Image 1 (tube, helix red, strand yellow):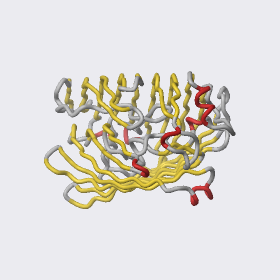
Image 2: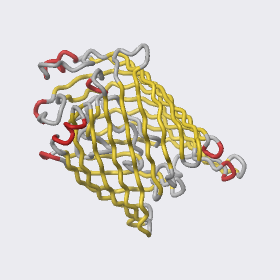
Image 3: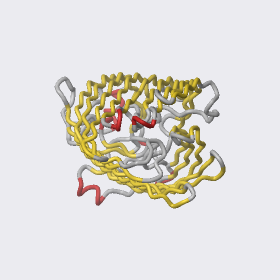
Image 4: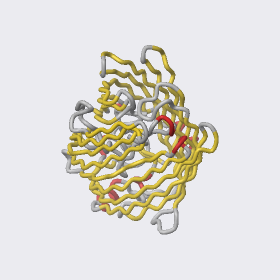
Length: 365
């Protein structure tokens, strides 16, 4: 619902089943306080790395009155369990003040996620994978301040304590060098950045764009010492009659010293759909995708998408890396016509027979 959060190895955290908006909801309309809604829902999700996920979600949304000129405040609490024995419990919320001057975002999550690990680089094979089982507690806080117009300054902090039970098995996969972080540890990060946000909506933009630049560094108390650069840009071009052409480009760079599960991870529910998240990982990732979105009938819409990415040890290595193409299609079912929230079901295919079915909440980007 927000900037979608994932577990440390990356999977969908929350996907709501396509129930009618009013079912089980308690909604209050007021011209002074705005529109408030509390909605318990069953939850379902899917991705190649998790399989089917089932659970429950509580969704609370407050749409402020028009006089505040603010985006909605929301809270999502969910508990999910996958068919592969993975579990996650989380609460995530964000609040916008009048005129969107400030945005406050927080996340508290606990998870137990056995995940496959195929090694580092773009030459790993699908039959080289081994399982590692991690347990972690994560806390994230982000503050965003509007500077001028659509420009915002951002700052945040992240703390995660992680234990990896099968670290010895992971170490046997790579003879030299052994990947960092196979015994778990503590992640402590601080992030600063800037962004330009001209989107006409948070959940399914139809015009405008979003460009983010952030730098993350390890903070005192961390088990690892590294930095991360993120450049993320998105553009939404209206084509008329509800049709939208959406473009997304992403560059991630991580310095040496990052644990194996905090490297740049290719694949997942949001970019390079068709590859399991973390199937390919390295210090650098460059990827782009294009998606055509169109309504079909009433609440139902469809998308087709394609993308291309690469992972490498540095920028020159990205130019020599094996390409990671992806192509796919999906359906959308709109839950709320005002906020344009929706259920999405996507199927993507990648290189060497890689494929994935994704069930999630809102658009991929």
